[in-house]
Length: 168
Image 1 (cartoon, helix red, strand yellow):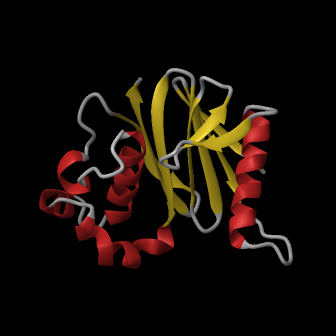
Image 2 (tube, rainbow, N blue to C red; image 1 turned 120 degrees about the vertical axis):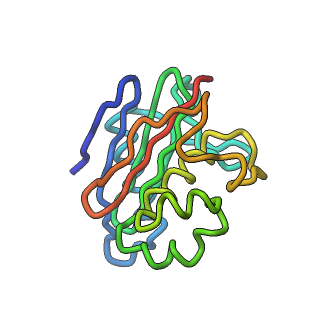
């Protein structure tokens, strides 16, 4: 079942990732994303930039894609660059081990006990940055600095989802 939400001009859709017998995890993730795209933008063709960012070929819609262990998330917007990230709530300990690689000292302190929220915000902010080599700790502050804007951060079933946008 696909769940669809609107946040202003941004549409977010979530779908369960279900692997058929013999299907790889990657194929199951792709099937969930394809099902979402068919629902949101029938006939759309998903491509990728040279840097690996998703694009809807032949469309002016901006797109961002993420997945947790159980859920695929797709965000589309006609006017803004968007970034989405979803992580399973069970990843807390794993994120704790690597958080210092992407969060500043101040962010680690402010988000103590809520590192999954900070992690998803950083991932979403990275997706709207134009720099694959960006310094996550210094150049992607939480809360987002203008022109980036926080659209949503919160629970989505057994996951945490963050969504940010930036004017094009």
